[in-house]
Image 1 (cartoon, rainbow, N blue to C red):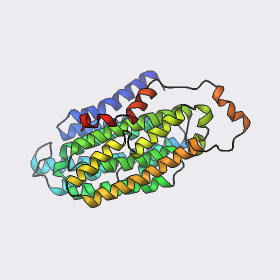
Image 2: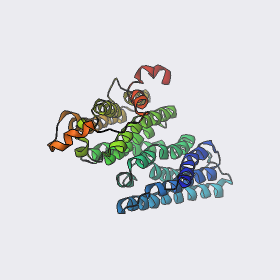
Image 3: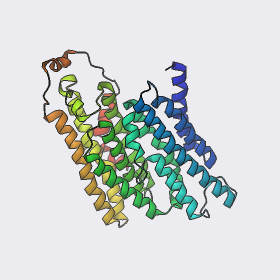
Image 4: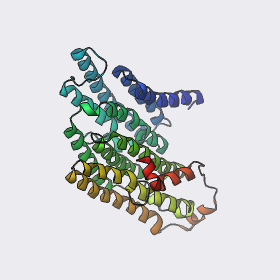
Length: 343
């Protein structure tokens, strides 16, 4: 792709959510979301093949539907109050349709089914943008207006997301689909705490981005698309094995790694608010998540798949390494001692 075109696309992807974050006018927020949506599609279709075309089409249709519902909610609110912001007087049905549109944009259950399919059809570097930066703008709107939404609907969506993210991730063999279901589960954790302590939602999002980024960097550098392709990692890049194992365990929320911090803080906060059943259910589903991350670690570092002799020579080849991988690895695994400062 032309460098000037790429620069414009990336600039639009970065500025879209920033416009949404800095705006208090609902229409401007919607414009920021649209900029983000339209700029990502050319990246998805770069080096076009049938699978990436299909992924881009699915992404466009679902996101356009969500945008249409959101715009309808904004216009209904303007018709009712004559304002471009939601107020306590805004009708419940308007806030519910707004939440539905944002759940479609975030890939939360029960509107999650597009996310794994789209992530599977695109390159890992675009998948990283889809699963991290694209979540920022819709979460900003939720963060601003969560108090006007029905907390029961938020909690129901959170429970469904956590359960679906855990159960559907169990039988996956494709790395990008595993990361997509992991994203759905993490989004469920973020939404579950939103009515009680929205600051923890922000903390969870930041730590989730820190853990997901190094994983996708390794996938992209070595073209790891499935569990079987990752089994050759021991002779392609031996040092990445312990690094990736730690990042996966951290993503699963195993103490004393960074990923344990948001789960610990969220469960503590839910228990303070007498949500015993919800916190127990979420702790149990976290174990299912941890199981499929452990299975990934087992197949990559604890087993040697049958390979031909030539593949044992990969270690002598020059492998691409990213200078950002080491600091990201440290932040995604070793931030737990900073928890008093972060909380």
